[in-house]
Image (cartoon, rainbow, N blue to C red; front, side, top):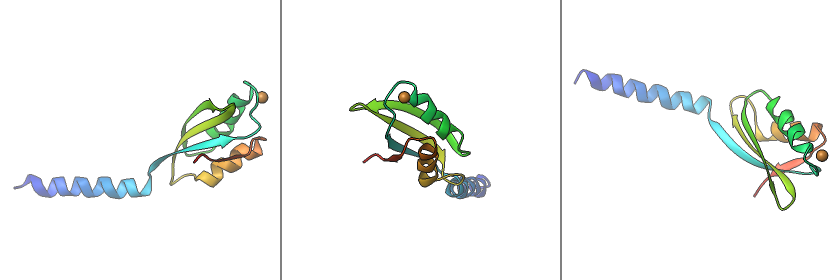
Length: 95
Ligand SMILES: [Cu+2]
């Protein structure tokens, strides 16, 4: 039975750590990204936000879509939207 307290402690540490830094993914529809040069600009604007872990650009119905993975303890969806807007590409959460 000596191992049980250790296991419980490990689980507790893991869950409380996760509560502080959750990875989240959001998909943003990006306006004005009308040519192939825009995608990399949008991607760079998002990658510059600290807390962003990964940005995948794609296209849906002729519009740019950015799938962003980020740490929610370091940044937020509104901050991501602001970053693309400041680069000239307003975005919104894809539904
Ligand atoms: Cu362009």
